[in-house]
Amino acid sequence: MNDHGIKRLMSRREALALAGKAAIGGAAALGAPSILRAQTTETVKIGLVFAKQGVWTAQGQHLATGAEMALAQAGNMVLGRKAEIVWYDEPSPQSAQQNLQKLVDSDRVIAVIGGTNSGTSLAMSSVANRNKVPYIAPNAAARNLTGADCNPYTFRVLTTTPVASAALAPALLDIGKRWYFMSADYAYGQDVYASMKAMLDQAGGTEIGYDKTPLGTIDFSAFILKIRQASPDVVVLGLPGGDLSNFLKQYKEMGMKGRIPVACPVIGDSDLWDLSPDDATGYYGKPWHFSTPDNPEADKAFTREYMAKHDGKPPADKVWLGWFSMRALLAGIDAAKSLKGADIVGGLEEARISDGTVPAYFRSWDHQMLRRCMVFKVKDQITDKWDWLDLVAQEPKDPRGLDRLFGTPEQIGCKMGPR
Image 1 (cartoon, rainbow, N blue to C red):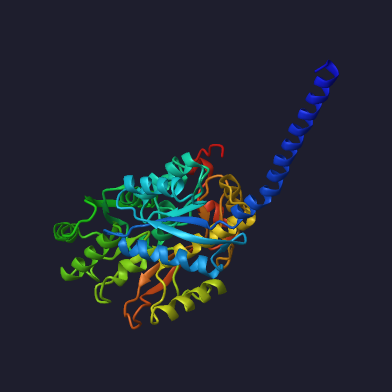
Image 2: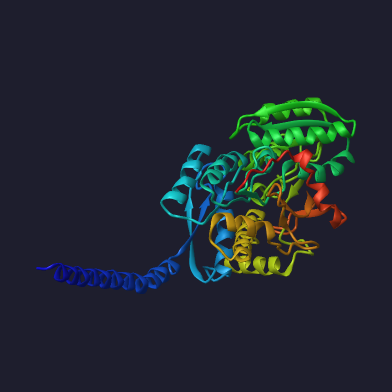
């Protein structure tokens, strides 16, 4: 074959090769929209990590129920795609971390809502940050979560212990300035003591006693005897869930109800409803109450829907916290118009949710939700099966003081890193 024939053959081969590449490229181009369509029809997964066992079981169920209700009210849809919840347990901080990692690695969730207590919430926060997955803690009160341990991917809905303490303290100081403290020996209990002690010191009061109790204490009789002997004006408690219920039952049994008032800056309805009305007593900070007159219409509709499904029983505040947290997440996703973690973070910082007198929102520099703080007192005479509380104070009185109530950057100590 001469040089001219070789050139003709090579040209023909090149042409065939180019045609083959074009055909492959065309097939890929035609196939790409199909792949994209398949991706956009995949179910969006949202993770929950709440207790299914132990002292926080009831609260975990309430929080999960509220989150499920909020997603159902949105038609189980996120940005036009079907959405579902994947719920794992949190029997310990370490297990909570492992289960959040599992949600990220195996279930490919776009975000996580979780933590029935401060210990598990703090543990999960670092995992969320490492994986760049938005994490909303609905029920953690320890200040560090949005303070010294803050990070760009962690958001908190519940009012912090210091803020709840600042709202509760004036009502207790009106009773007297000699306080006895008792708290569970873990993050939340320690934070209650530190926060309420600061309020007492600021008012020139006196600490009469302070006891730390093991988490999960069943018998409080020895501690109650010490309180009786000390005879303070007020007993300030930092006890979670079942611990608080056990204490109040024994407080009544030992003849202390009505003699020395008890108080706790952050509690849940189930803590009281686990008691008989005769055992219930005290002053409490609580994030929400189903019968508060100025609840927004969405909250009232949520209450009616829940009661219709639960034989007239109203939603506990923990149900509301789960519902409100999921609503906040959905609002953030809607604002972001994206399912990417960093975008959702930006959307959560922008979102505003109706919350009575002023909108609730996550503050951009620490991701603490800013909303009104309420203080309740157990009614002297309980006549309703579920409504045991009277609203006695609400802070701030002027909505313009909301940011100031929740603290300055210098007071909070959050140094937010990059997304």
